[in-house]
Every structure is written in structure tokens, then in C-alpha cells.
Length: 494
Image (cartoon, rainbow, N blue to C red; front, side, top):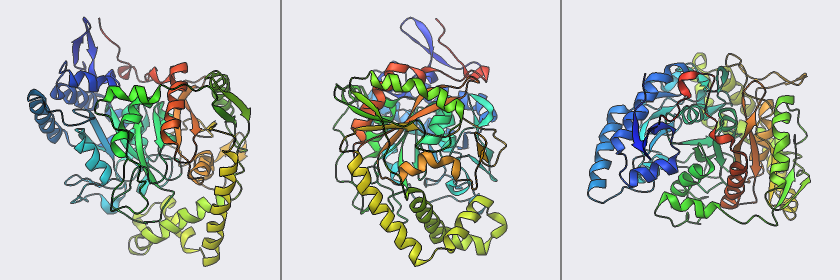
């Protein structure tokens, strides 16, 4: 099916191939209308998403209505915000007023919330136009997007492979050029892992940078909400919209987002002199890593060394991070999901069941120990970053795996005991409380994407984005569109 294009620079250009910053500029100059943009993305979704299964609840009619409103506002000279007219989709864990929100669970297959999550409010308030909801694992449990309501999301670079998770639908939709931006959440890697698997960018912000509302655990520092995009600049644009304090969220950071009124200004925030930058490099964080991942990431060390600073082989002491992460994760599942296990055990999947059961086994001593471990880890991380600005390491220990697998059971011949083990390179970083980003780093010999994880200083989100932007500019991997499914590899005509 042909994908709508528009005349720009003397040739017909596919609207859907434009990154969010470029598309925002075209919309602001009225070189293209919001209705044209939204219609083009809807056409692409209808043509190609049946094979990918990324956007599982669709709000196309409402989106076209909002696009018409955006065009009328633009005609009056009143742009709606930084995201004016940009097509987005929301993770199916985020509440959306009047739109089905299932959490990937049969228990909520027909659930329609009456309110919007804060991230949905902020994106809409900035002029974004939602095309629907993106697929997730059941209750967001795990980094493989499959659930009994909608099934599995397939990787656009190889439809036989996983798109990662839990923001797998969002990452796949971005990679397939179905949307320009997406929100996601990250407990143990759910923004970073799918970004790595799908050759897009996912930022785990500092806790409190993007307030989580509605509230669950007001003291939660592990679960964060954040932005995803096809480029670092796009991701930074969405962060500028999502960040900022909210009086309803006790741990929200007071620092406001950068004061910008045009998406084109993002470049000035990211283009920095990185001379003197101190980078620590760890190829594996002491964990088993697939040889293909190691092979792809090896050249990244030289690229980072060429950004203008110094690079040394080092990693923080992450002792206790595994235990504290698993303890607080299990505690949260037991706190907020335990009733499902008694009321409808047949409608709860094995991963969620396992998490709840581990939580119910916890004693006060376990929580006390995890609290002490977290404090000790924070002290060691602070000491490590006295001599380091950024840590570079793998996002995921494996490349995208068979979409029919439940989880990765071994890495490089080493058996794994639980469905969490293969995600340790991401969740150990979650335990530190530091901002972290996945940026495209290349492809395996089989053409599967691999991301590089960059971990910044405490609350150093914007500094981290600048380093990621420099790496992205030096490598260009983000520009590689999916080729395994030929219809997705649309190119300019002209």
C-alpha cells in the first residue's frame, strides 16, 4: 500500500520517515498539515502493524478530529505547544480517559479509565495527537512484550524476534515509523531494553524528573516514566515536555524543564563541548553477555574515546544491587497485585504470579536489609562518580531473541535461574538511582539491533543526553530503518 508523501525540497518525501524534530518544524511552518501527518501515520499503521502488533488499541477517529483542531489553531497563528500535531501513542499501562487501558491483563480487557495519567496530560497539553495504546507484557512484568489479551509484539528488524519490553510496543511502533514519539516506563529496563532491541532511544530519567501520577507507592524510586524517540534529540524534546514538578507527587524534582518554545532549540541544549569528559567503560558489568553483543559494542569504546575526553576500564561496585532490586520489586507486586492471585489465579500469568509469591515470602528483615543495601550502594556510586562523568556498558546482555520464547534461559552457555536474570545489566543500574539511556550502537551479523547504555551522574539527565547525542552523531546507527520486512524500508522518492 502506498504511503502518503508531501513535496519538500523538490521531491516527494515520506512523512512517516521524518524524525520528530524535523516533523515539528514542517508543521510549524505549515509545509504540511497535522491532518496530513496523522493520516499518513494511520495509513502506515493499518498497512504494516498487523505483522508487528505494536499499537493494540487505536483512536484514529479522535486523532483526526484533534488534527483538524490543530490545523485550525495553526491557521489562526496559535500553535498548541512543543509537540503541535505530532503523532504519539501511550503505553498500555498509562491511564487514558475514555480509552481502553488493559495493562496486558484479561482482568482489565475492557477497562476504560475516567482520567489521564500525568504523562498523557502533559503530552496532550503540548499539542501531541495520540493514535492509541502500545502493547506491554502483563502488568509490565518483564522485558518481553507478550500478553494474553493482544499476543506478542514483533521486532520490526526481524519479525521472528522479540521487541523487548515492557515498553516493547512503543519501541516497535517508533522503529516501524508508526509514531513520532512515545512514552514508556522503566522499573528494571523497560525503556532501555526495548530501545536496544528496536534501534531507537529510550531514556530512564532520574527518579522524580518525570512525576508519576496517579500515585501508587509515593516513596518509589525504582519505577520511573520517561521518553522514547528515534533520535536522542527527539527523546530530549519529549523529556522537555514531560519533566517538571507536580504538587501531587512528593518525590518530584523541583527543577523545571529547559525554557524552550521551539523544538529546534533542542539542538542548542545538546551540542556541547565534551573536552574533559571522563568515561568509564565496562563491556559486561561482570555479567554473562552474548558474544554478538560484545562484538557490536567493542567499536563504541573507540568512538567514545574520540568525543574529546578520557576513557578508562572501570565499573562501580554493584554489590547488593541485585538483592535490593528483587526485594523492592517483589514487595511492590505483593502490595499492589496480591488480591489478583487470590481472586482470579487462573487469569494471572506465571511471571506475575511468581513476582507476587516472592513478595508474599518477604519478612521485615528482608526489607530492612534491602534498605541498608540501597544506602550502601548509593555511597559507593557517589564515590565512583567523583572521578567519572559517564559509565558506558551494555543495555541488554543478549540481542533480540525468538519471539516465541517465554524468556532467555541461558547466555553463552550459562544457565539462568529466573526470568529476571537476563535483564541484570539494566536493572542493576536502576538500583543506583542514576539516569541511563539506550542509544543505537550497531547490528549483529544477523542484522539485529544492539544498544549502548550510558549512565550519567546523579540528576545529570541533560548532561547525559548531550553525551548520547554526540555518540549518535558520530555513529549514525539510528538512521538505519528496518530491512527485514521490506514494506517498512520506505525511502524518499525524488
